[in-house]
Length: 254
Image (cartoon, rainbow, N blue to C red; front, side, top):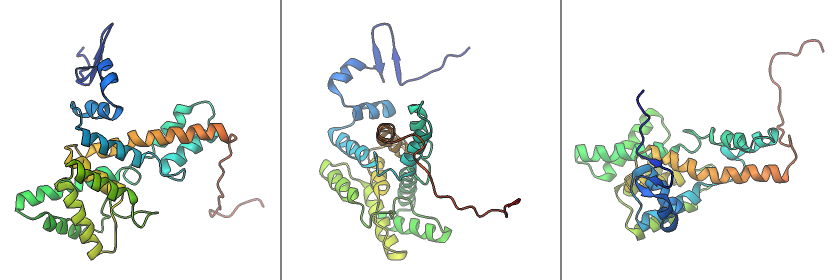
C-alpha cells in the first residue's frame, strides 16, 4: 500500500516539525499568524505581512450573532448541549460563496483582471473597466463591493493605509480601487467591504485565491467559539425560537 504523503508536518519520539522547522523553536520565536503562513506556504511572513494578517484575522473574527456562521452555531448550541464541537462545526458549515467566500471570489477577479492587463497591454484602470463591463453584461454581482450594514466599511481604509505603510500594497490594491471607482460610476456607490480589502492584500502577498476563504474560516472560528461558549454559559437550552407563519396547503380536519 502506498503511504499517505505530506510536506506539512511530522514528528518522532522526541520532536515535532512544521515545514521542517522545529515546533519548540517556533513556540519561542514565532506567532500563531506566522505559523498559519508557514503551514500554508512553507515560508514565514515578513513583519509587515504579519501585522496585516493579524489585522485581517481580527477584522473577520466576528460581526455579530446574526451572521449565518454565528447564528447557526448558537442555534445548534441551543438545541445540543452535549457537543460543543457540533455547534462550532455547524457555524463553519454555513461558510460559502454568500458568507465568507467573497474574499476568494474577489481574488479570482483580481487575478483574471491583472492577467488580462498583462496579456493585452492594458492599464489597470482599463482592465478594471473591462471587469465591470463583464459584470454588468452578465448581471453578476462584483465580489468585495457593498455591505448590508455599513455605508463605508471602517476596516478598509485602515488596512489599505497599513499596507501602504508596510510596502505590501501592489497591483491587487490598485485594481480593486479602480473597480470600486468604475462600479460607483457605472452602477451605484458601492464601497469596498472587508472582502474587497483582504483579497487584494492577500493577492499582493502572493497567496492563491482559495486562501481568502481559508483565512476567513480561521479567523471566524475564534468568533464562533466565543458565541457558542456564551450560549452555553448565559442561555437556557432551546431558548432560540422563530416566529413561523404557515402558508402551505389548507389544513384539513379543523
